[in-house]
Length: 288
Image (cartoon, rainbow, N blue to C red; front, side):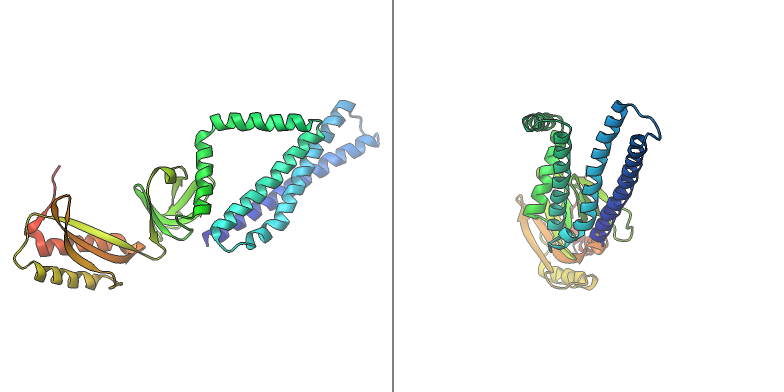
């Protein structure tokens, strides 16, 4: 749904661009026409400037028109949402780049100077917008390597949520399904700096750990009772495990289970309450 809305907004902006550029182009061409018919007098220098501006507007008009007519078709060539994003962006950038090069060539800039200009611009941008370039390359990696996909629930640093959109500079995460307008923007470069946890599309694996101060004599009976209690609060009974372990030379109680993203906080709270009821005298809670 989010991806469909994004595509509709893109096509709508292209339609507006086509209308605006066509109106401006018609106005400029009309002005040139009445000037050539000597209806009004315009200096030759002004006519030349208007002609150059008309050329630029005409090129962007045709690029916007081509994109409006063909972008949806290019979008539908691919099945994966990430591929749709990647190739439609590349297609749009390619057309605009060709249009800019054609404008420069039409204005009298030689191919050699265009090449030199591109090199200087690229070098300057590399130093000036390093963070932007890092986000851009991170975007390419996210789309091509696919550590997660649109619709997956992920955790990155302190943020977690459902992936709504993988943008050029940000990834949109929805942390609350009940509030559609509430989302988190995570910069793409963050995904190069921190570990990514892909939690799945509908349910994900959760683990709650408690530190023990010692073993109760009836440990096995308490573990079985705790597992039965946890089972009653979960929709998914598979992959439920309640067991003891050693971590950093300390005794631990672990509860592992599968839970829906929207119920994760309530389930975690209930699991903590059940574990406390079953082993309250043997659990260790550090104090600051």
